Length: 407
Image 1 (cartoon, rainbow, N blue to C red):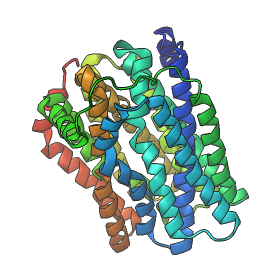
Image 2: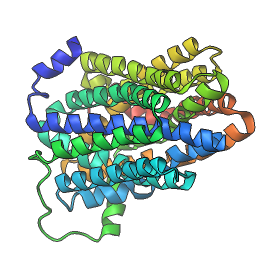
Image 3: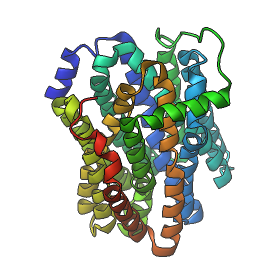
Image 4: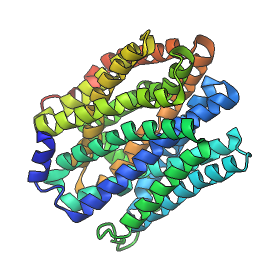
């Protein structure tokens, strides 16, 4: 609470456009985490396949890897407010279609896959569209404070979304759960219509799209600190993030929990992330940003291994709580470090390259899904987390520019 009061005192939440963008991010995140839990349980019930459960999250991440840099370039060429509204409509339409199909009794796995892919476009554009608008609203000096508060919202949603989704799924069914997600998107659209930032259009001639994409990577890769942030992002998304997709599978198959209890278990990661984001807001100073980013990554990887091997729901929940704390450090500093290290004219494109780096998680989901089919979800999750720790240690020479330096 003290940390959040500190953020308020520095004026971040006093900015009207930031409040709107923060609430939009919160609503979309609740809907996203609700969908991911419900989709995981529905697909596992329909197929009994851990690989297909991981594949649904893979498809949601696919637009980041395939189109992240392209989105960063295009976001500089259209009013970001219009782009945000259009993407919210696409996500709402996709989840609304799932609700209608389930009510009609026609819901199939391929339809869930298509909806997951469409929903992924909102995820892919969050950095170069909504978070870029956050920077425009609050300014460079307050970006870290704004990101801390944004991560608080995102991680509150990781508690509320799975808990809400699991409860509604257990009490009513998948259609009703998807209907709640549709309602959240509709409210987000109404709030986003009041934004005043993100209305600027590109002036002057635009470079060819392919040239602009190549230049985006050049800008990101020639700066040592940007390279370091992108490297750690790739490690996190190859070896850490995919592990989260196994929570419904491990909860159902190994810990023998029902949908509502699995929702609570999945929410423990979000509770930890709330605590972690508050700590970051209270303690983070520019010289510590890189250390927080790296330490959060290492903690997340180690505790996901512990979660996979936990013999009881209580120990599994404790491990996810600790993972959330580490994940908050990673998530808060990821976009902040990119925004501060990139040249002002290249921030939107650098955030697009960041989305591409996040999208490398596609390969991580493929590996985890294949291993889960062969070894079972707990062993596969432990192996992937351990791999991530080893790769992080082996690449120390490349991420050292982030340690002990103010950006």
